[in-house]
Amino acid sequence: MPQDNNQNQLVGGLTGAALAGVAWWSRLDDDTQRRLRRARDEAERANDKIDSWLSSSDSVRLLINTVRDWIIGTAYASQPTTEPQTIPDLNAGINRPVVATEAAARGASWPPVSGTYDATGRVTALGELTTAALAQTYEEPRAANLGLIQATPPTPEAKVQIFRVFNALSAEVQSRALSLDQYRQAWARLFTGLNSSAIDIHHDPSRPPSAMSIVAGLTIIPLTSLSGGVPGYPYANRNTDRAMYFRVNAPSGGVAAGTPFAVVTFGTEFRYRAADGVSSVAFQPAIPIVCNATGAPLQIGATAITSVGFQLVAISTLPGNSALDLHVSVIAGQATVQP
Image 1 (tube, rainbow, N blue to C red):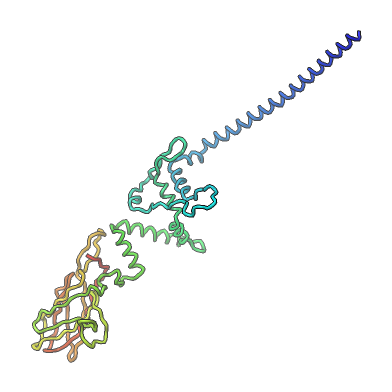
Image 2 (image 1 turned 60 degrees about the vertical axis):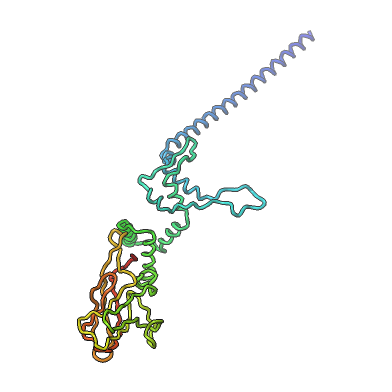
């Protein structure tokens, strides 16, 4: 009997342990299943969110090639990260590509030519907007944009004025066919004035006009105290095509009224830029003359005026051995160009 009791106690103990193990396993399995269900629910929600994002308008727009082109152009301006170094390379960094070329401007189109990308999003060919976006990161356009901004917002009329000035500039330059150097000269005229000898070659004293007598015994020389001029003349005149000064000495027999007595040749032919913006056209300037003479007033005029020169003519009779000083102005009336 004692042996049977011990056996029954052993069986009961084992049965209790087994039942306890089953209960523990059941609870563990329930917890695991709950965790799995929760994980599946969270994964499904995450997939739903990913699917929703991938199919959203924002995601579709970001994958349009022209949008990617713009992002890449802006991203290029970011300073690349470098590994920590004991002594950093001060020359390391990105280079600033040259994007301001006439070829790039000439090749611009609408819609812009987009870049191409492989399946992983890597660039296989750059698009037009990549260089356009990169250009906007440079200092010049940023400074120009900042320069347009005023301390207070513009009025509606002021905004119209801003629009008009840029619209008119665009329309004007599109009607021209000037070279880069010609546009530089136009800007230089704006800032230095139309009378700058650096711009208008007819104001350049290194290209003076020349005068030659066509009457026997008459002399005509530059009225200047510089070398070759009239000794003792108190003014340091320098003749140019636009303003010239001459001393005329009449012959002993004088010069009859209506007689041309000298030929003046411009240092540079008078021409203006044609409407096509490329070629130049010869034209006839206006030439008023002031005559200073001792004794009776004398009148001198310009005749046979061309783009390369003119003749001086005695409107009134020049007395024999008379001396007269001529102040000649040449009025172009428009901007001139070098032939």
